[in-house]
Amino acid sequence: MPRVKICGITSLKDAKLAEKLGADIEGFIFAQSPRRITPEKAGQIIKKLSPGVLKAGIFVNEKASEVNNVIRKLHLNIVQLSGDEPVSYIKQIKGAMIVKVIRVKSLADLKRQTKKYEKYADAFLFDTFSKEARGGTGKVFDWKMLKGLKLSKPFFVAGGITPENVLKAIKESGPYGVDVCSGVEREKGRKSEGKMRKLFKEIYRHKAKASGLKPRKVFKPKAKRQK
Image 1 (cartoon, rainbow, N blue to C red):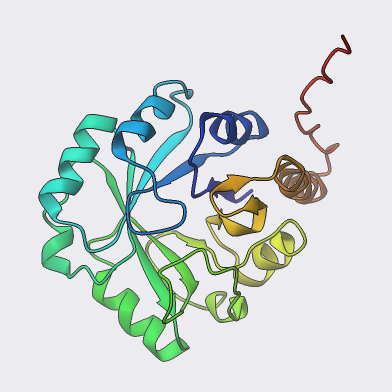
Image 2 (cartoon, rainbow, N blue to C red):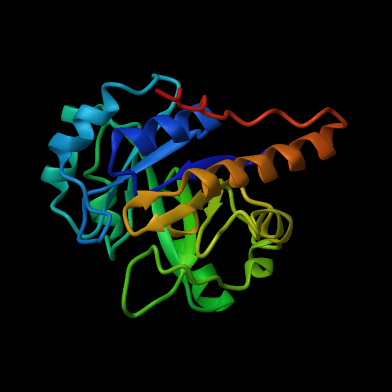
């Protein structure tokens, strides 16, 4: 079953919901974005999450020294580099796994980029290319081109993944994990409880079908008592 990364977490409420539903990784964006969060606020949230949930920090062309500082302060497990960071930059990052984001333009460019970073990144995240934003665009790309990509490192697929198309993304790309952000939001920076539950329901249904087991029940909050 693919790992699930819920990105763009900005509140403890959303973080705890993602944890209860079964998110493997939660992503905190420290770059310019409608979903940007300060390291201080992210740290307050991270302290209240289970050690079993991996914490990822998303950076775009940030100073390596500052990235390392945030890693130490927040005890990040993963650093996601979503900018134009060169190989020499990646070598400076210490104390966390490196996920290098490749924004997909074409198959030829994808092969060129992965060859460039494959020795230095622990994993890749393939997202939709956009001139306007580094991620969270809600736009998909041709996931099928990833299926035959020969890599020695695992990869996540992102870009417009929703509860309605998550299984299509998994089947067409065969990823190690899926990265979901805007597809489970009610507004930028705020997650929708209904969309989150629907996403995990679809993923657990996929797992059950593959294993022949009954689908796992998705966590549902208790109804509020009427006064």
